[in-house]
Each structure stands twice: as structure tokens, then as C-alpha cells.
Length: 440
Ligand code: AOF
Ligand code: ZN
Image (cartoon, rainbow, N blue to C red; front, side, top):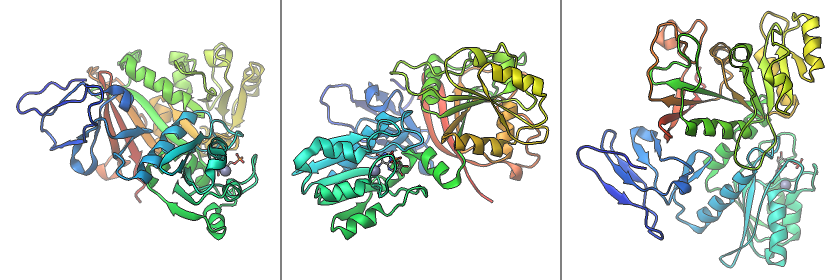
């Protein structure tokens, strides 16, 4: 990837095989940098630019990308092994929910003797897989695990107990397990059994890796990501309502990956009426569990012939209010979709809907619009994260819609505030990630 530059340029050639990984190049905002031949594979698809403390950072080999987050180049052995555990945990993305992603690495005499990750809900925990691989070598070893080992009998027996039995000398975990449904106290159990226990490094990255899990186990509400494709002037469609295709192929592929990693994909009835989407992830990788398709349709206006009701081999939920005509809801149920009654008013009660989805095991929701539904979610402060793909096209037009419809803020102070987390290149588009700033 090349960044053309005028003026002073710094050149970095990272293309030579075996070239030592370059450091992160820090430049002042506005300073031109020419980054040549970055080995894209290392960073999955893009050069990252983050705006931490007002500086831009181009990420070069040496730093790893774990779930969109830049992990600084490891400096110690502990960091190196924990980063490896975080990296292998990613293999379970889209398959473990409602359980978390977990990775484990066992090290004996400076050598990795076992690795494991949680591959699917109900399957063996990461620690157990790693211990099995290590066999007798687990004795006197150090176990690196991205989540505090469990101490409960769930679908599987407690990992903490097994770790003690295998006589592991030290356990280093990245972050604690805040799941109130499990007993907790894995670290304490290990300490009592005279296993050395340490927390960190990379706690922040471990939390981010399981952001949906951590939010939903604590609050009972799924983690909601709003995804939109925008033009440079912030429109999501032309004045005539055309939105295919604003963004580049690369961004559309990324959206498919986001769908595959989500437990549910949510759209408003307006989107179904105008686009008739299938809402199925189309990815090159082996098919993961297909997300639940959810249509927010207060009055149950969805045409029985819609693709989501007839195609795609994935469960579909239509969320309506109690006021919906029973004749229509029955018709939809006949097509095999589930009706969720959320609220008794004119509009679907979104919090109630999210609660109902949570009780069906949904931890992460990808909200794909349209602008009316997005503004309802925003108003209820239910959006945790925004991912915008901005294409370098200008649509113009007073009547062309933006990502949020509805009344909007009158005063600047009334704005909903987000924190910019990442700005990255995505094909010819800009990918922007922002988190809701829960102030006041
Ligand atoms: C996992 N995988 O690698 C670890 C987990 O229903 P169970 O028995 O599989 O238990 C799930 C809980 O176990 C999960 O919510 C989390 O609190 C804890 N740790 N879970 O699925 C793992 N280490
Ligand atoms: Zn466990």
C-alpha cells in the first residue's frame, strides 16, 4: 500500500522477507509519511491510523492487530506468550457465543508445549485443550490464558481444579471473568492451592476482544454495533433512496465478516421494504453459525414474500408490538419466522427487544439501519459502537438521508457523544470506529 506524498517523506521498506519488523512510525498530524510495501497480511487488510492523544500512527509489522486493536510489539516473554494466546483465541470468533473467546498457551523451559482455544460453545475450554496438548509437560509449566480460569461446573468441569491437578506452577491471565452466572474465584482457588497467579499483560486488549461478552454478562443487554456505508458528505442513500453500492468491495467484504461474527443482525422494516435484503453473511471462510435475522416491524408490515422469510436458511425474528394485527403475525409465523412481541405502544420497545434477544443467547447485535431505526437506538442510548465506512463520493441533495433520521439535536450540547477509536483504510474507503461515550 502506498501513501503518495508531497513534501518531506520518510520511506520504510518492510517488503524484504526476513526484514526486521519495523517499529511504529509516529508522525505529527499533517506530516507526510510514505509507507511502502507494508506486508498487509500481518495486519489483516489495512494500515491503521489511530488518533490516540492527537497523533496519527501508521502501524507497521511488529505490532499485531487483535480484533481491530493494535497490540504494541511485545517486549517481554510474558507479553509475547499472552499475545499468542489472544491471537489464537480469535480463531473462535463467531463460533463461541454465548461463551467468550479464550486462548491459552503453556510454556515450559522457554518453549511452547501446548496451545488451545475455545472453539465453540459447549466445547472444551481453552485451558483444557492446551493442557491436553502439553500432557505431562504441563507439570511445573507457566500457563498463559486470556481469561481468568473458571471455577464452576457448567457444561464442563472447572478449569482451575484441572490446572492444580496438572501441577502447573504459574498462571498468568489477561483479565478477570465478570460473568455473574459462574461462581468466579478461579484465581483465588489457584492461589489457595499454591499456584502462583498473576494478572496481565494486555488486559485492555483482552477486554476488547470480548467486548460483547463482557457487556452482556454484566448488563443483560447485548452489545450493539451500528454499521453504515456513507458518502463523503455523510449520506446513506441518494435523494431517490438508492444505496447500492456506496462503498467499495473491500468494505462490503468486511461487513460480511462483521455479520458472520455477530449473534444477530438487526434492520428496520424500511430497509426490508426498500432493499429486500437476505441478511446472510457471505464469507470465504468456513461458514460459522449464521446470525439470527431480526426485523424491527412495529405493525407487522413485512411482506410474506420477503427474502428474509423465505430464503437463506437462518432463523428470522420479526419484532412487533402487541397492537399488530393477529392476521399478519400468523401469516409470518406460517413462514417459519418467530414473532417477538416487544411493547404495547405504537413502536417496538427496543430495550425489551434486546432483553428478549439476550434471553435467546444473543450477546452481539449488528445494527444495519436504516436511519429511522438507528436514530431510535441512538435516542435510547443503546448503541455501543459505530462502524462507518465512508466512500470518497459526494451524493449531495438536501433530501438524501444521513445515518440518523428523527428529530436530532437542537443544541450542540444535546449531541450524543462518541469517542473516536480508530480510523483505517478499507479499500478506497475510510473505516471509522467510535465508541459511545457514556457521559451524564
Ligand atoms: C468458555 N471457554 O475457554 C473458558 C470459559 O458452560 P461452560 O461450562 O462451557 O462455561 C462457560 C463459562 O466458563 C464462560 O461463560 C466463562 O465464564 C467461563 N470460561 N468459557 O466457554 C473457555 N475459559
Ligand atoms: Zn474453564
